[in-house]
Image (cartoon, rainbow, N blue to C red):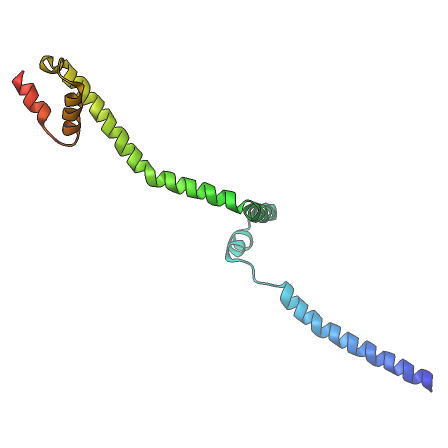
Length: 144
């Protein structure tokens, strides 16, 4: 009789294990069948792109995430540098244009015979005035 009780207990344990397994398998199926991202659904399910492209995209995504985690500070510094470069670029371009204008006006003033012997500081002052919208050069041109 003791053997029968022991066998009955094992059968009960097996039956409960089987029941648990059946219950858990339905949950595991639900867990494993997550919804695909919209872009995977669109490109690879609906349109039918090759699966090897998806594998490459996912590997690249994983490598990019790992690279970002490893080089977070470096990427931040590069971003900060590019942002500051973009911020100062209009100032640099404006200054470069001003310098070209002043150089051209200075060369033009050197051609005028009356100002060749004058002080270079006065010539620079007149070129800056002209490049900022002044008309001193026109008066000098009329005098000659």
